[in-house]
Image (cartoon, rainbow, N blue to C red; front, side):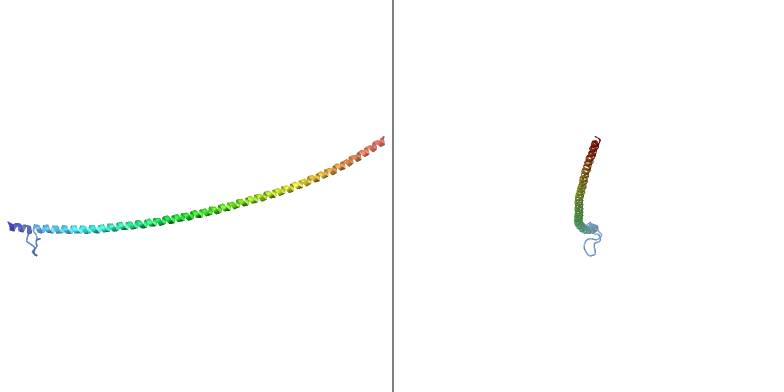
Length: 166
């Protein structure tokens, strides 16, 4: 019975003298070896996958940092462009405001000059009218004096005629 049990468990026996022939123990030993190799391969694959995942995570982190830096650079560039645009617009507005102020001042000066010219013209016209009025008043005085002389002459003649008639 022991021989049969040994045969069942060990089978034919291995050629190198170790257990592991075709018997039950040998088959179990082969399955254990295969499972052990499978576990070893699985561990190796898992380690490789973990390393690959770590590399991918590290790559993603690096890419994210690069993108964040690029975004920061873009934002700074955009802010710089916006500042430059704002300064340009402010300079243009200031320049236009100065130009408009200069035009306003020139128009004010022109209006004052025009008013002074009109005042001078009105003063000259008033002086001319005053001269005309004075000349007309003098002429009226001359006519009045001539009329008085005529009236006196006519009275004298009328008086002479009355004397003669009397």
